[in-house]
Length: 359
Image (tube, rainbow, N blue to C red):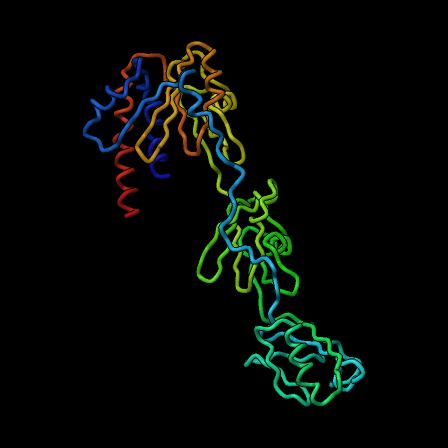
């Protein structure tokens, strides 16, 4: 990001000084000759009908499948603090030991810190880490020593032991208890009031047991990618980030220099120029429509020569990327080499600073 702030400042400065007038054709070799002392690699690519298909690949806005474990086959395990309601048919004194007129939550048996609860006649029963059916089976076996063929029902009436948290760009950040019904990522966000207008559903962060997973929930909502709506587990923390704009910048001899939002759609070079009013007819050099793009190999500068209006058809097949800088030069008086050599020291300095800061 720093490198493109430098680009913008340099381009604005050059535009103000009116030194952006260019000699054509622009050649990579000439640029390298003047800036050979710089560490920044520069490549000039002239867009044409012969090579445009290489740049006509839409960015993937649909998201990808998450690598987060889905937690399919949810089976709630009882934990400390849960309240159990136990019914022994035909034995009301065992079913409601606290007397009638009280709710199951009030009369139920709370799982203690050691993971057990006390039950008459049989003593301590292990509950933690078991589901209700496993508890029922154990209690039936042990109570059968005192009651012939006991018919028992065990259910959780107050879920207290396990929860997840939802934070960030949701209407009502909250802590939500897990129950015997599986809680999916979408269910949890809905229970928290839903996403805010600023939320980025494509990069929801789920933290689980020291690991972090980025989940593209929008891929589930719009494209039905089922893996991107995983079942949550106890202790998960869901964080919904604020959506950050992905933009391209348009500067120079343009009617309305501005930015173009690429967050939710693919935008071509011709579309972007049209949205800002096109080129200034009285001062722009249509041969000098340049797109600066920072790549792992260095700076690539794409040139669209639109002196023939048919070239804008080529521009309809050039997909812009976030942080691209589109710059339109003035009528030719000054050498392009001097223009770009005015920019590249700034780019090289910022690139070097970024490299140091990341090492």
